[in-house]
Length: 246
Length: 224
Image (cartoon, rainbow over all chains, first blue to last red; front, side):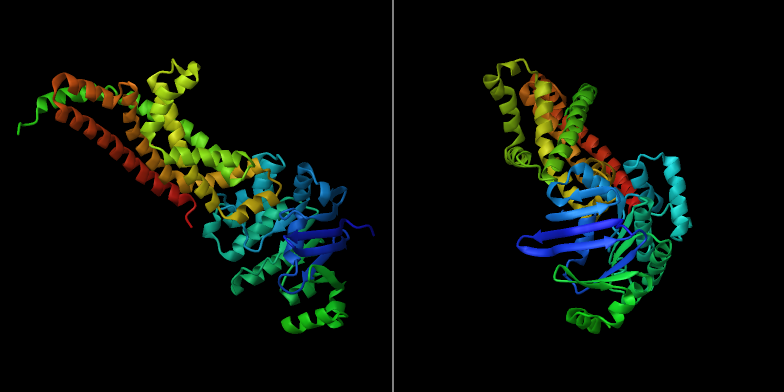
């Protein structure tokens, strides 16, 4: 099957430090890929480059029929790429001046030009899906971390993106809220939404992912089905990492 | 020591009050213009727009680094010698322009601080859903920044109202100018300036009450 998302030679440097060193990755439609690896190996940077929150220095990102070359990306291409890739932040990053519902409708009305009524109706569907049907009018400051992150996920879902990017979505949460957020991500994964998730929750990655990608030093070291990566890792670095987190 | 001529003071009150609209009008126009200019200056600085950023930095430094009175004199008496087109500028216009530039420099810095106070991740989140820089500033960042900056900006407005009294040095008869004229006729300087001082004071107190109300009100919506 053809790649829905095709990442080729993606490279990102901060000063002289090469954080992403020519990443190649292909995601098939509906494929759920979890990225694991030690801290500081470029996992989050990879996700951020795919949403152009960090501008890659070289390489090509293709999402469906949109192909963006890092060397000459235009502003319009960057906006188009962002509209096709939903991003879920580690610290939720909700708009503090907007209610839960408005956080979800914002992209629909401002970016996609939907009417308020149409966007609100869609937001109510999403609020129900994320289990916050009764909290639509709450401001983020009045919600728990788990609720805020669910709104963060809802905001990304509203874009109907080809690809959802989860950047350590439970790392900033108190342990008591991790379960509800993982449950929500699991339900989205069950809907065969193409997604890339950076996570330290190994058990969770194993459950929901079709494929595990192990990164180290800005490169993909090893990838494969969860059973193989966790059960029979080939590379020494993968083995060492899994032993540490195991 | 002579007693205060209170009858004269009471007679002065309506005369000075007659100039309140001019004083408030100058202050309001200057404030509105300064707010717009300050927001633009702050955004230029926050976004670090090349060249413009440096020019704005110099602008802010100059208008914060020199006395308002000197700026007004430069504007009204000095610039026309350089630009003859300004020769016919009237004192009110010159004062309003001078106050606008002066206060925009101060307000730009507090707006900039307030913008930088908006969590960076919210900028990213807005960008991540495909908002343009203009959209994310208008819809996410500036509404939050203005809440933070509002009390400070209100202080500047109060300061601005009082600073309009300097327009009298440009020959404008506003509240202070009127008091000065009355005093010059009656020689009752103490009475005339007391009356104008008390009227300024009351105006500012009324605004301060409004300011406190506004702070409570704004604080509620997005309490953290």
